[in-house]
Image 1 (spheres, rainbow, N blue to C red):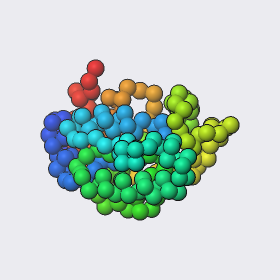
Image 2 (image 1 turned 180 degrees about the vertical axis):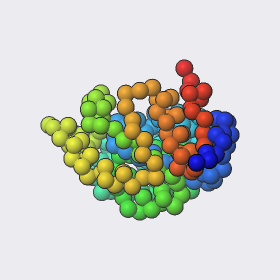
Image 3 (image 1 turned 90 degrees about the vertical axis):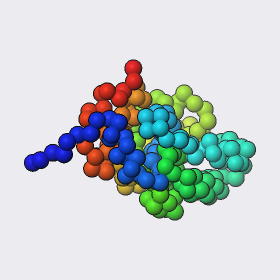
Image 4 (image 1 turned 120 degrees about the horizontal axis):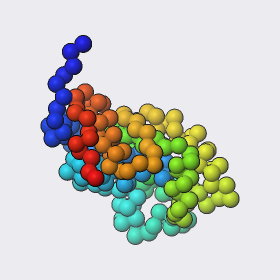
Length: 203
């Protein structure tokens, strides 16, 4: 079996960006998976702009996501989210982090498939619970049993997230490590041979 010669990190990045063209790298996954933190780090590694759909929604509506949920309900929020993400996808190449429910919308998935490469950060329940319990701004978790809510969301959403182009397991590890693993997975997705990412991980 003849392996292709591996590209040094700089060439791998350039080749990946060439394959990406005007598309966006779109992070999907449940709340607490680290989409924003890992997305920012990956954007820095690739010298791409970073956008967060929740932040953009808050900017255009001048309301927080919890306020939008409370005032308009989830279905109205999802409609706004869809419009914002489809507009953001016109601005590639970039790294885009999306809210946990965004990928469940069929039109949003179609838009991401047409204008992006989807990356699912797959996290286990204990990791998500540990992270989301530290924040009180999760509208879907305003429940006496937030763990049960998360379990149900995992049952509903993981089969849909699993249709993403790339799946990267995440865990309690430095974001530089996970971002490097995402980069490696993207290179594999595009058939780019890459030297081990150790040299790219910042201390």
